[in-house]
Image (cartoon, rainbow, N blue to C red):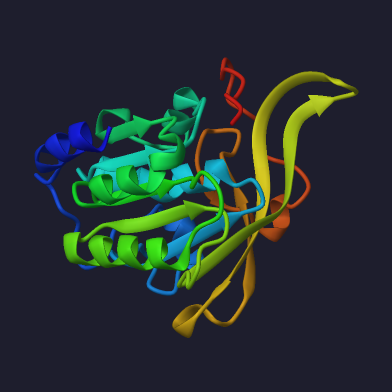
Length: 226
């Protein structure tokens, strides 16, 4: 597998991000730099697959290649609804025990790597991957704990809107995220987000809509679920 990924990597290096990889405006408050820093790790826990995908959305629409490694059964429709440009997304679902080698090959070729490691992460493997990502200009967003992660995001609550009395269509999802980490990210804070709201947008949830999402436009299809 790593041989074929190594062949693919040079083809993906056509558009490297700058000093920061952009994120959707609603997610800027989760990150100390208001963007993803190449060579730094953002770890996401609490079942936040949607959050991982949303963190890559703005990068893909601005022309940066992204790879998702280890996410078996990844919902591509849901990813597209969150704003991910699927034409800029490489998916490797089941790398198995050789996930580290696959991650190293992809980090050398893409601007953002979404990674779900297969098992515990050895500190030496983590250090090597970060080194490659820093040299190649790749931002790392990891599902689960990661040794020395610069930013740690945890989904602490989630709720769905649109199902009443056990019936109806899912129209919006509200999550609350706790952000912390090291250095500039050390001060913990929480942000509530619609991901997405009834209109399909990812945005900050304000006090006025804490309990209810805005009404969905007529004819909007139910959400794809991650």
